[in-house]
Length: 273
Ligand code: SIN
Image (cartoon, rainbow, N blue to C red; front, side, top):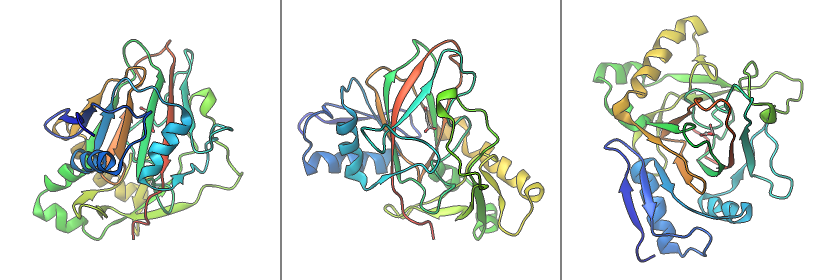
């Protein structure tokens, strides 16, 4: 663990961690420090790592059970690892727009781990927004108004995805899942907003989409103000871990004509109550 340093990326959130080789066995003290940095900063980033899918699974497994995406295939030899591939002629990216992973399930992902295999020379950054800071910055009146609201969330089927990322669907319409709009973090106790862009978070329970939209749009605009965010520029070998219970992320679609390949693993979260 000697030499492990944590360097905040912005004044808002995100931190880079230096001085650790993720291909080597990691003792409990080093993992505790890394997990502590994740709780402190919402997203953590490592550079210049060379790891196999098995090593990535082992690292992700330190946070809990691997979570399987209901509609995405995983690597046949390494169940749980999804290849996120955007080819040169794909016009869309996977996960375009602000979201937290797998809110369209009963137990949305706790953390996501993304490892860069191929990246464009420039472009393809990922943005993150801290929903604890966003909640704290709301007025007391707004906090009171939204306190009991619950959201209705559903997997988006009407979206163009990169060719390699076509979802597997059963033919049944995806189920809807309710979650609280204000979620208490199970580890830190802090309160934060918890929702996605309107393609996934459709409405509030007891309200129509039309009635819900203005408040959802306003909260998304508020939550993604630059002062609550960080932006990560990928290099081959970069690895990010983010806490889906606290942050939104947004992969930037600005590298048409270039290839980007990532290995992604999500870890099972808790029911949101
Ligand atoms: C995702 O939304 O999980 C992918 C993020 C990215 O490709 O940067």
